[in-house]
Image (cartoon, rainbow, N blue to C red; front, side):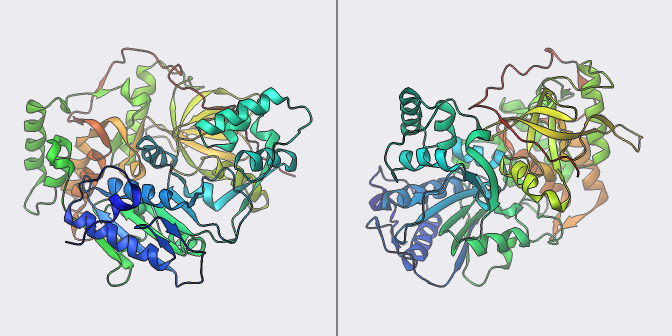
Length: 518
């Protein structure tokens, strides 16, 4: 086995790498060395015109992908590379080497951040903020690129607060918010990135399609993808992932399941699905047995209506999703003609014409991309606007022009409680399809088993694997600590009403507005 470079590079307590992890670490380290970054000696060389490279590190849940990514990040940080956060970038220096750690969604990025890895979304890197010149002076000062500025209308005490915040949390928008500024004061717009960066790590790369990979390759000469080959492939890739199409020797596989050693019953179930002989009924018996032995697995006769407010029921069929949402709203006493504060929503995309591209960028850069999970807080100050909390976003509370659609069983036209001329479109989020749940994790996950049984009975396959197994694998691995396997089409009455008391803003709320049609 090749000796891992991790301990020497990070000067931290030695990590216990498995053989496949050590080999993957050293392979990535060799790729970085060729690009002028020496992890072993924590040194950098100026960026050159070296040939672009893409590597993929793949493995099932529990194989140690996140551990490896975190170790590589720490080693890179020790070399002195600058982390690209997506909120502000200092003026480019010839000798500057950069690293961006990315995920397709806010939720996936927040999962990494909770584990000590400073991740942001792909959209936050593709779209960069344009700062007001006077407040950019503060950003330059905070990042060590300029002297302490004198800003009209901003006291020395306010600057001190900004500086103190930045020393604790290296976020320029957060520091400016601590000084009493609103996002609309210092961010004047967004632009699509044209100039390349340097090194990119992309988690949950199984969610990428060919277009996204092409965009990333244009920006990052050195790109490392981390992904799970057992998840569901994006629509249009015929069951393949983008990393399946890389050249010989460009895909590194982690095969050992590390978290299995922690006696995790959810992972036991996930990896049992790899058995070709395992049928659906046999798998359900395994779930039932696991539930009798460990309270982290629950054999549930009913859907938990309280849990649905923050952790959606995962289903296969859209018809099931709509029925469960209707039952959830009825159980909580939601009126037919309006939303209640605390109802969950899912962003279904941005509905803006091409001429309003700038406003689309505004919304996407703040986290309102297709699949983003949000909580409805109440109506906005203008007709058609809604106050929402974007789950996992660094600045979660925004007001945006919204088109909210609540679908109903056996009705062609949805109920629309908020209808701007154009803006961010939302569907109800108390239940979501397993496809849309990829990249997300929740403390407790409810999986609607009757839908997976229907998928098994349909006999469909994806890339040679029965579809129900891929669906089951993705669904149960969304659970961080507890899995509820719901076996009946029933909904338990909620114990508590809907609330937003658990949602705390991380900084001063930003207001995002779409342009009115001319």
